Image 1: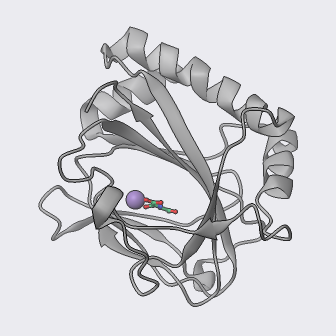
Image 2: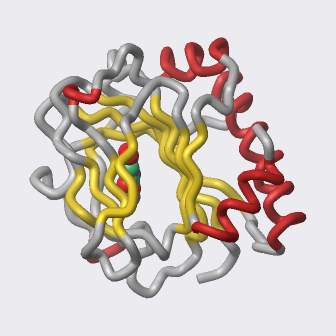
Length: 197
Ligand code: OGA
Ligand code: MN
């Protein structure tokens, strides 16, 4: 992972798509953690926070599991992201304070309608990261991430959720949508945050 290059592209275009920033071994281990064979680990995702928190299957079809700091595989990924956090702070003075991250599994036939990752009244998410864990994914399998320009009308990028691909983007700048997937779709989604509200 070339942090200089990531910083430069975030500064100039606001997002970067990386082909395979992590070694196969780590990706394979992360994939073993992104399985809902233990149903207690994954739960339906919710929209919003606090009193506004609702679960609406038609908007968002994934089940999620937050990373566990006591798990050695999760620790390994979090360590990589910590290096990235410090490097980006050094290069861009972003003041990134921490990183929250969950595994996500979309069942076939589900997606996530166009949304922003920055919740109203809660602007502490600065950068979104999504790492995809889908082996042998074809363009015809659907499940693309579509990034829109800030006003939300024009598409600026379509990302196929292939094994090892990662996207990083400015959370506030890009409304985005997960198109309906025709197969089970696995990923790790996280946010670098600044402290406070
Ligand atoms: C999200 C999200 C994108 C993706 O979880 O907020 O937009 O490609 N995920 O999984
Ligand atoms: Mn999102």
